[in-house]
Image (tube, rainbow, N blue to C red; front, side, top):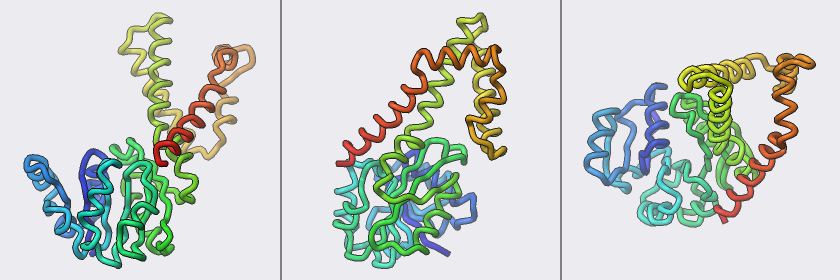
Length: 265
């Protein structure tokens, strides 16, 4: 059985931890580095995993998941670098930290995979964009894809595209929540009470997303099927276009990608 170490187990780290355990990973083969005694006890109680210090966690581990805040990465790597096995695969979910940063801090030849998750992983519907470092084999990338795939879907992209991944799927849930906020507000303005508007907007989003996912049809085609000439949907779409909604959304995604590039240096 693969031995997996987690350096940090915040919201996303614990989400991945719980997903791999549900998929059959033995708790006895999972180690978590956590400094807070209360948090450590909570992780032991909830998952039955070993909670220890960072160096002990990574020693002999086949996979090391780095799930600390980006600003904490340099200190964590300095602490564990000489304890990481040369055969380990290091997986980073620290936003914006390049594989080169890990490779410079770890023993030469260490396999590193960079991953950008998103929050729907909390309900098993995550989207992960992963990129291989310079020393990764295809088999190692596939193994990481299988591990993260327990919490959602995985795509493999060149690391140069990670800023775009961040802009589309990493930040993407916020765009969807923003849209639903406005649908609810519009429903209230049209006369609905807020609770009813929320149910209508939320379930419409879930249903439309499921239809898009399962039908295999292009979103533009699905939109056209709902948009009768001169009808209510057409009136809404025309207003969106006049208000620059489409252009604003596209510009927002590009702005997010640009900001991601700035933050990652």
